[in-house]
Length: 81
Image (cartoon, rainbow, N blue to C red; front, side):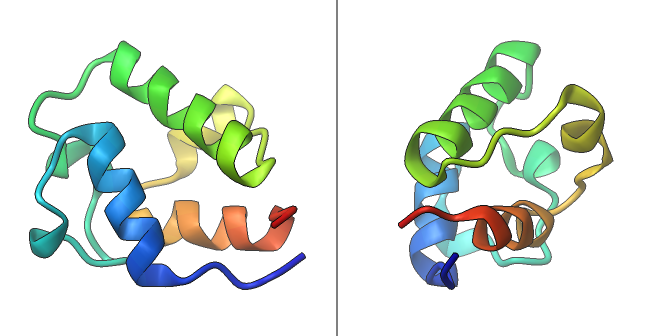
């Protein structure tokens, strides 16, 4: 388990949700930050977390996450990189 660089994580999440990383922080709500939020974007984010960081979230856990920081904390706690 290791610490994931917050700036890099924000940049990667921004790419998945098609948002400008310069306008995001760990406090940003990722659903609100997305150019267009849909269940497909949510699925892409879940897939990204699992493939990139080895973080498998249940749908309920994902729904409970509100900010990029929430996702970062979970990914950092379970990171295999």
